[in-house]
Amino acid sequence: MASVEDGEAEYTDESISFLETLWGEGYLSPGGPDEVRAVLEGIDLTGKRVLDIGCGSGGITRSLAADYGAAQVVGIDVEAPVLEQARRRAKDDDISDRVDFIQVEPGPLPFADGEFDIVFSKDSMIHIPDKESLFADIMRILVPGGWLVASDWLMAHDDEPSADMKRYLDLEGLSFAMASPRRYRKALEGAGFHDVELRNRNPWYREVARRELAALEGDLYEQAAAAAGREVVDANIQTWRAMSVVLDSGEHCPHHLRGRKPA
Image 1 (spheres, rainbow, N blue to C red):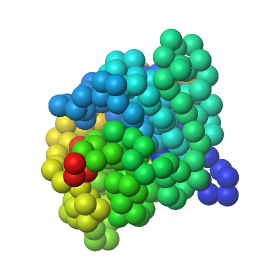
Image 2: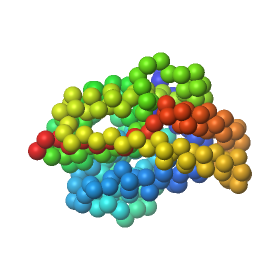
Image 3: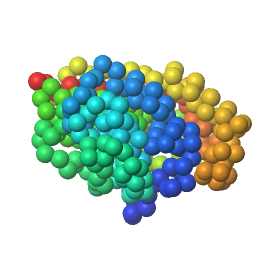
Image 4: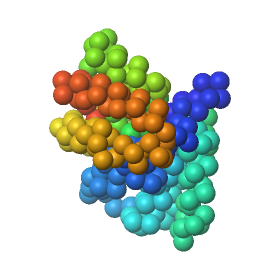
């Protein structure tokens, strides 16, 4: 869920089209449906009320209802362009009465205490600098015994980023607020979560990103250029090259994470 500075959206129609060319319609982060399944492993959403933080263009939000049996799913984001696409696509679903999309302002979550059984997020909390306040707020809106289940992009340490990481972040051009696994664990436990788990997905995404880059430089280039424009694709090829460096070093380390509110 990106931040918005002066009302300017970070995810344009062109960038949305580019990312969906890589990861599938409605998916703005790596792995598509298979990675969502991996994040949710062992968590039963049947009949549950679910919040999707940083829902983007809505593919996951809709899937949580259609494929995982959630009774009600609310997708939230701060950016209008992605939500416009999410709402348009949801109108064509036979689950539209179980899915809602809400634009929110950065800051506290606009929901009542204990409103959700599950809080889900896929690679969007990287945009939220204050992890401690975020996890405390998620704890508040969960029912007793409820779960936070998420993936996010982490950095291996909380020190000054390396020159390679700074170059990658500069090329991304997004409001990334990366933090370490240590800080995430401390923030989750400090908010009161039990059964906290963090799993390093760097080995998985290091290989996936290498294949993505090869595809962008090869057979996928023309398709991506037709969807988003050559300038967008060329810029992202440079970004992927820089990202591969920090993935290979381990400084960029996507993680799965989860925690349970005490029953």
